[in-house]
Image (tube, rainbow, N blue to C red; front, side, top):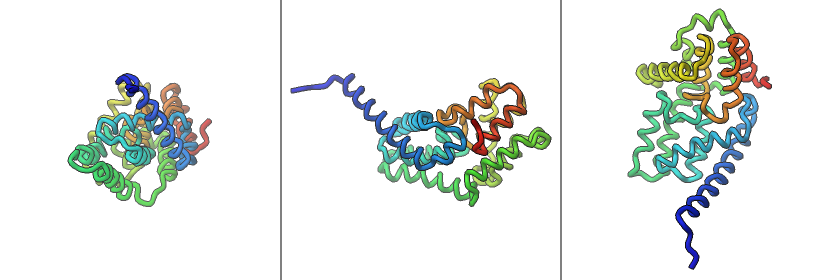
Length: 240
């Protein structure tokens, strides 16, 4: 009788997981291709982003392809690290920690929180409209430089603070500032632009693998005017 070692089984499981992730990423890219093209996200970057989501989901015992697919859809507008984002993490983690429930009920709880945010914060605005609003904001130098962090967030998603709650929203702004400082962004406008993109793409957006091209435009350009212009062009779908 043929038996397989634990190491061989783990390797075969890893191969199957990679195949499943690639299939989900291909489906996700096809579903949202215009948006991914607009922000400069490449298929391999989307696949690596899906892998980031799968690694978190596995720890939470959400291992089915169906679960990863739902979470991947959410990540298009909330980023691959929505589970750490102070705006969503409390609601999401409350749902996934209910291990006494069936996986369908747990993943539905997460998706209901996502739907609440989408309906109450995004409203009727498409993600393209919000991206255009963000691009206009960061390129209006005289206005942008005067705004506080809370005002920047409110200009991009006016209904967010009220829905999230004052405490969670303040924590979000604080955590984004700490993340930007940790990445040693060189100027005040780099930090402000990072906040704007965090509102748009989610907490730790720069570590989301699908955001690689946009991250480069921010990290590698020391001139804040050039940086904001390059980011704005990418948000408008005209980046190189």
